[in-house]
View 1 (cartoon, rainbow, N blue to C red):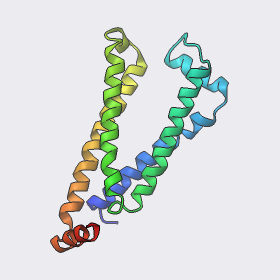
View 2 (tube, rainbow, N blue to C red; view 1 turned 120 degrees about the vertical axis):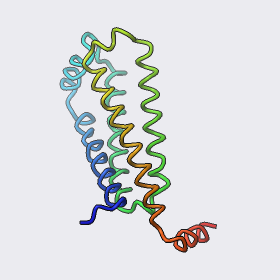
View 3 (tube, rainbow, N blue to C red; view 1 turned 135 degrees about the vertical axis):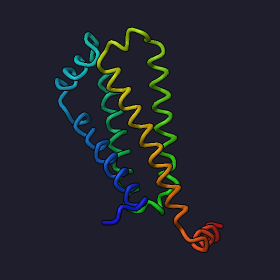
Length: 155
C-alpha cells in the first residue's frame, strides 16, 4: 500500500471513526456502570435522569459521528465537503470546552479529567490540521483538467 495523502486521510478517518463508535459501550452500559464512571470523574454528583440522559445522548452522538467517519473514509473525494466540516465541528468542541473551563479556573486544573479533556483537545487540533493538509494535497494532486471537469459537472 502506497502512503499517499488519500490513504493517510482514509486512515485518519477510519481510526477516529472506530474510536468514536466505541462510545456505544456508554450508550448500552448498565446504570450502575454509569454511576461508577461519573463518580470517578465528578465525585458527589448525583446521576439522575439529566446526567444519565446527557451522557448516553452524547455517547450516541459520537457513535453516529464514528459511523459517518468510517463511511466518509470509503471515498474521500466524493465526501470532501462533509470531511471539511469535521475541522469546524472539532473547533466548536474545543471552544465549548474553553467556555466550560473558564468558569471553573483555577481549581479545575487539579482534576485529572481536566487533563484528559485537554489532551483530547490537543489531539483534535492535530487531527484538524492533518485533515486540512491532506485534503489540500489531494486537491492539488488532481490534474487541472480533472478539476475543471468536476467544476463543470456541479454547475
